[in-house]
Length: 231
Image 1 (cartoon, rainbow, N blue to C red):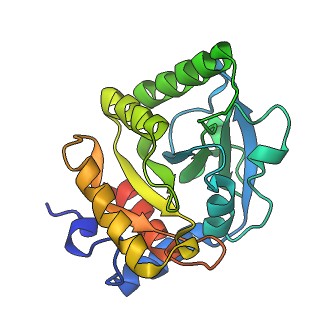
Image 2 (cartoon, one colour):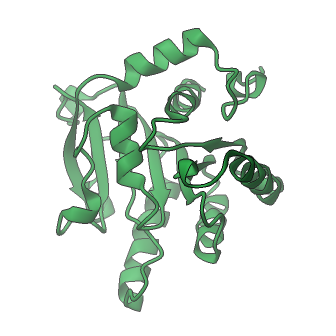
Image 3 (cartoon, helix red, strand yellow):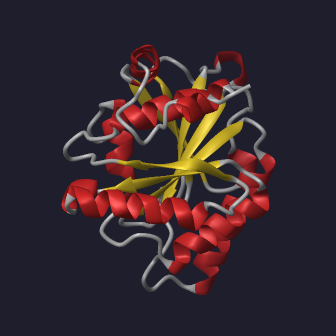
C-alpha cells in the first residue's frame, strides 16, 4: 500500500486538508508532562504509539515540541535540572500513562546530544539509554531528528543517524530555524539533506522545513506524525 506521506510529500505545500485537520485535532489539545525516564526500568507501560524527537542540545527541540502542541513552556528540557539527560514523556491531559489509563499517543523528548564539554561517562550513559530505548521499544513509531537549518548535518548528527540505522528505527529529518536563512538556501539544504540520507535504510524519504518562531511547517510535521502512527 502506498504511504500517504509518499503521495503528497510531507515537506511540500500539497498537504491533504483532511489529514491536516485530523493531525491538528491530535495535537491541538491540552498535553502534560508525566515523567522523566533516566533508565529503562522507569519507562511507562507499552501501549500507545510513541513518536520521539532527537537533536543537538541547541537545535530548538523544546521550542518545536511546544509549537507543535501549542503550549508554551511545556517542554523545558534545557531549563529543568535533572531532566536534561532523561527521556521526557508527554501525553494528552487527563491520562496518567499507567497501564489502566493509557493515552492513544505519547510524545517523547529525547535528551539532547552534541555537548561541548561533556565528560565521556555522560556521553556513554546517553548512548546506552538512547540505544536501549530505540531497539527495545516496539511502540516507537518514528524518531524525528532535528537539524539546525543554519548548519546542516554535522558529524554528531550523522553518528546519531548511524545509531538509528543500527537500531532499525524509522526516522525523519526535520530542519529547524528555517526562517533564519533565505528560502532558496533552505530549499537547497533540504535537497542536499535528502541526498545525504538517500542510502540510509531507516530514513524516511522526505525532509521537513520548519520554524517554531514563525509557525512554518508545523502542519507538515503533524501530518507526518499522523501518517507514522497509523502505519
